[in-house]
Length: 287
Ligand code: XMP
Picture (cartoon, rainbow, N blue to C red):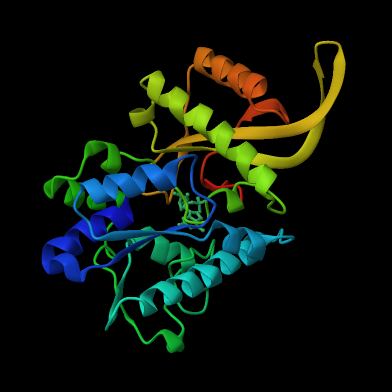
C-alpha cells in the first residue's frame, strides 16, 4: 500500500518518466505478484514485474537468524534493483514508499532516539556504487495518513485497505530456516486465514493479520494414524501505526472454522494456535 501510494503520487508528478519495478522476492502472499501487477497496469502505472524468487530463496537457504534474514533480503533486493535500474536509461532517483514507523523502528541505538527493534529492509540508504539519490515522499507519514493521501488521489479501496505486509514476508514469519516447502505451506495457511476474514466481514476490522510457521512439530491423529507435523500460529491485531497493537478478539466460530480448514486443507500442518499477545511487550511479527 505504501509503495502504491508513492507510485501514484510520483506518476502524477513525472508520468512515464517513472519506471516502477515490482520485485517478486518469492516471499509475497499467494497469487500476490500476478494480482498486484495487473492492478498496477490497470491503474496506468509504467510498471515492470521482475520475478527474482529463486535468487532470494537461494540466498536465504540455511539462514535462521531473523536479522541476518532481513539483511540478506535487503542485500538481494539492492542487487536485483541495481540490475533493473541499469536497464532504465539515465535513471537518477530511486523512490521508495518508506513511511515513518519504518524509520523509527530501524534507527540504531547510537544514531537515534530508539533502539533497533527490527531493521526494515528499505531503510538505511543505498550503497555508494548505485549512484542514485533516494526520494521518499511518505517518510514523515504514519500509515493512516498514507491511506488518506491515497484516498485523496482516488486509489481503489481494496488497495488502500490492504493489511500491512512486511517486505520480508514469510521469511520473518517462518521461525528458523526458510525452505520453498515451508514458504508454500505458510502461503496456503495465510490465504485461508485472510480469505476467511474477508468472507466473514472481519477483514476491515483488523489492522493486520497473518500466520506464523513455528519450528515445532507436535503429535496429532488423522484417521487412526499418528501424525507428527507442524504448528501454525494465527495473529490478528488492532493498531493505528503498528507501534503498539492489541490482539483482536475474533469470534470463536470463525477461529474454529479457520482452524479446521487449515488442518484439513494444508498437508503438513496438524495444529493451529491463536496469538493473544499485545505489543508491547510482544511485537507484531514473531521475528
Ligand atoms: P513489529 O513486528 O516490529 O512490526 O511489531 C511492526 C510493523 O512493521 C512490519 N514489519 C516489517 N515491515 N520489513 C517490513 O517491510 C520488515 O522487516 C518488517 N518487520 C516488521 C510489521 O509487519 C508491522 O506492520
